[in-house]
Image (tube, rainbow, N blue to C red; front, side, top):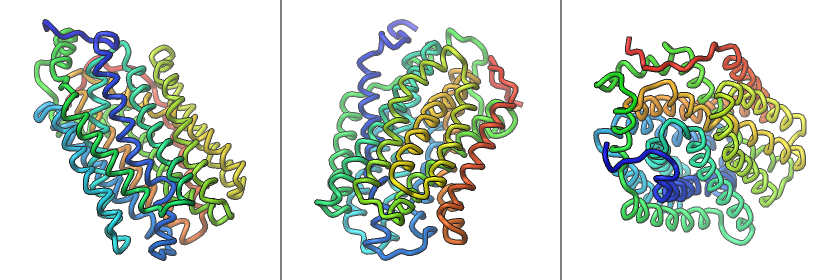
Length: 412
């Protein structure tokens, strides 16, 4: 394909722009991570953990199905159009949170936020992979996920810091409106579609001339291919424990007497370590392989959650647990997407990644329901112990999976 070059250096401008945009996508979620569970208790008088965590269930459910749709529509509608649509869906979020007369409207706002994330984050992932080609795939994903979760961390830290001076809901709606407008303008005016890069890579790759259908791809990614199956379950469990860290950990710390700034510090250090760590782990996975980082990362996450329970909600053990949880997630997050991308042909990548991200983000649904119900029936600590055990089991699953990289997608 004339005029199209794959590689990080050849596409540095667009790559850097997409890194910045994904930092804004992450910041939209980070605004909620410190204060929204507390708003449920303090502003709306909710006492049930299950009721409070419904906002995460709504977010995860919408994000999961939007990921699935985005993977199928990326080639038909175009990557850039879906990115812009994602930001348009973000615009109602701060308004709905600002005017909400009841918790139900906060849940509705998170339906929009999940759809925004499913489109905007998915497209920044896919477009970066398109630009760099197969040799730097892990590095590209490391940059993408690092930017997104540093955006999460920065917003979470600032909302925790400012919560003592400003009403938490004011922080969310003012910050969210500013971020959504900047993201929309940047995506509309400066981003270029990357479909030509996919065509160039597929031409060099050879293989099939037709794209695998969703009907064929869904069972392949979900359960037929052992590597893709292992990746899908690990992604789901990863976000299951992230839902717990997002929704239950602030309440767990608050019950032990932690201040808003301490809760903000714990809520921020986890995605900060996660974000920074991915700069190295994405690159490392290109050199040492995907499986070791995924298996070790899941086991480290399980150990971190066990430490959180052992510390009883005290600030210092919780901070150490957050650092370890962030490190484990940094090993897993970009590597899983790279592993899925390795296993399929270029023309099928957006769809396969969309299916993987569907299962990964269903982890928010599973995590929100599991953490809320177990916390209400037993205790917050009991919910964390259960999730720690599931995370450890997931790491063992990956470790015993026989790893290979299929050169083509099998459509049977």
